[in-house]
Amino acid sequence: MVLVAVAFALPQWRGQQWSRQLYAAAAPIFGIWGPHIGWGTGPAIAIAVLVVVLGPQAARRLSWGRLLTVAWLTSVAWTFALAMIDGWQVGFAGRLTRQHEYLWEVGGVRDIGVMLRGFSSRILDFRPDSWTTHVAGHPPGALLTFVLLDRIGLRGGAWAAWLCVLVGGSAVAAVAVALDALGAADRARAVLPLLVLAPAAVWVGVSADGFFAGVTAWAVALLAVATRQRAGWPGVALASGLLFGYGLYLNYGLTCMAIPAAAVLLARGFRPMLPALLGVALVAGAFTAAGFSWLDGYHLVVQRYYQGIASERPYSYWVWGNLAATVCAVGLATTAALPEVVRGLSLPALRWWRTGTAEPPDRQPGTGIAAALGPQRAREIPAAADRLRVADIAAAPGSPPVVGIAEPSRRGQGGGFAEALGRWRAVVDPAALLAAAGLVAIAAADLSGLSKAETERIWLPFDVWLLAATALLPRRAARWWLVTQAVAALLLNHLLATNW
Image 1 (cartoon, one colour):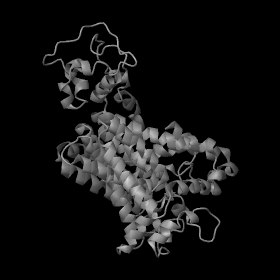
Image 2 (cartoon, rainbow, N blue to C red):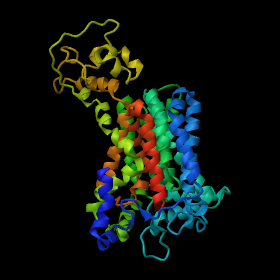
Image 3 (cartoon, rainbow, N blue to C red):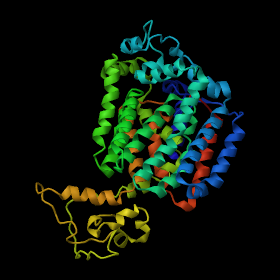
Image 4 (cartoon, rainbow, N blue to C red):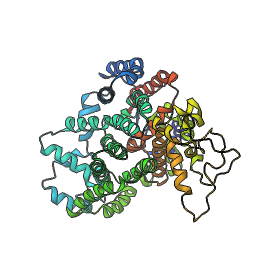
């Protein structure tokens, strides 16, 4: 709260001459101050009330498939209602048709092959044929998506907006699917209402970054499903890789999605990595064969970035102002859960040099994970893990020191780290792991200096994983946090006229 308050107050205190260099009239949010209500106000409030009252109960009682469908449709309705606060044309149908947006260039693409081969030559600014801002700032996959949408007859801003909202809204289901696949079914159910009412929905409706978030969320979710290694898992991993590859050609910054992917593999096993990498390679190979070089495009985009207002926006403000904007997008419920994220990572279990004072317990019923950690901690980890010996989880937080359970390993003898990794996998909380991965991706993007402002929109693909932290909040306080998230979204959309 202090971070957000200071980020909003500092530009007012420093004065107009200094704040003008921020190029964000409502810094740290990209928009202008303009209190208003609209056609979406009533429906948005009604949806928020329904989710607060019925959401936690529905998350516990509905069947899994039905719950995912209801969560997705509710997310779409919530996002659409928030957009309609600004009206049909301004808030929805006209958002993607403005001069700096993708649809501005769609009509000029007569030949897709020619567009791909000549794409990089039009990235730099101040040329007669320079791409518009958003097209130049991204690989051609984003423009290609809207061109194909136009080719199949779904023309205009409304159809493009629906694509962003429908795919972006599905990210809530993708996060839950990933948690369930990683063995945290209870976490998956608990997090869905909080994902639905996340303030990030303000920017999912309708920006192309909402679409990017949905695509990459399913890439991570499918990778998590593949780690189960059930029938057909190589195909699922390949599909995950295709989506990751597609993401790389939607936004250069989505290379940071390798961090959530690595977290999933580290937690459950690396066998799906090869099929996933094959999927990425297939997409990259197709774009390269069509004439677009990703690396050439990236280097030109960096030049284009500093040809614009990024060269004037002060890094000294945005390096932390970006984080304030992120808090606005993920809500205070997410930041409140961060201490639980640290605990849920169970990092002490990764130590592979162990000492202790007690003898190992016998291999008898009741000496597994539940006995060592106690009933409260045992309920927070996959039930299947209870079949493991205490030896496999001795390093877990809160467990007693045990001698002989994990003997001190010498470098070069092998097995020490592998054993520690096995213990850690048994006790790490998947919700904490995914949230931490999202936070690391945000930190990497922030420190790069290539994201100065507008991160409430640009970092949506990372925000959806940071939002997984809300699964760790106490269940008894679920409705309070739902109210907090909903009020934040409603205030942001009613007090500010956001650019996205």
